[in-house]
Amino acid sequence: MKSQKVFSSFVSDKLKSYVYLYSHPITGEIFYVGKGKNNRVFAHLEDTSECEKVTYIQNLEKQGLSPKLEILIHGLDDEVALKVESSIIDLLGINKLTNRQSGYKSKEFGRMSIEQVSSVYDTNPVTITEPSILIRINQAFRYSMSAVELYDYTRGCWRLNPENAKQAKYAFAIYQGIIQEVYEVLDWYEAGTTFSVREYDKGSGLDTEDAIAKRYEFVGNLAPKHIREKYNHKPVSSEYFKAGNSNPIMYLNFESR
Image (cartoon, rainbow, N blue to C red; front, side, top):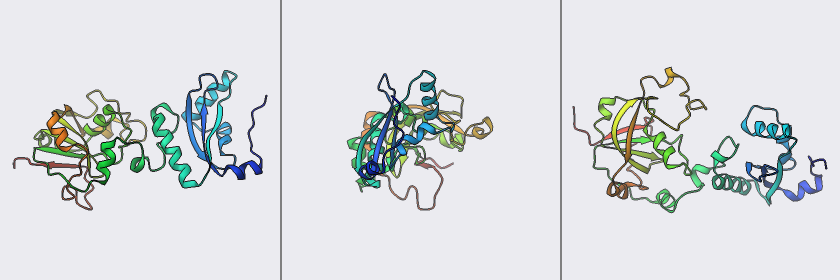
């Protein structure tokens, strides 16, 4: 039976905004989540752009198969549909899908632990007393990051003075003024010389040897339990990163040299 590729105007009106799924017709594995109106759900079948989603569909077609299309939920307004799409992407995991990016406002309202939710609205900042380097990872961070991803995006690649950085006993991963994790720093190395799960060739701006030259990354472990309990998921003082300061790095409690 030929696959349907269009809704009638009557059905489109009833659907309003909706969230849809693309999945493997045999295994049922979902490989794409989208939000749309009218006939948006069918648009990817005619897409010829170079992206992972299109490649997946083309590989199915080479096997004589077509993706399974489903409407997950409908009758929504645009804002709600965007949030539902985002929550499904967070639930399934962006790394398991062909979606290019996380959903709408996922960084602000996406999947979080109980501690992370509390930290977003906690207004009592902590004072860091140990020799430390604070590292803001606002651009790369998402709440659904794995522990390994968070570690690798915190530790490098940074343009800094390694002799200064070596004074830091601990490195703090900071997102929007909230401490996401604390690491005990063992040593600093030239960027790209230690194993990392980061992919520098996908829009990171660090896709060549020249781009990571004169940058550094640390190797370390999770900080001791008492340090992590003291700081994790707590806001830092606004004095640490004042308005207008775009430098992602800040040193605290270093001996003067």
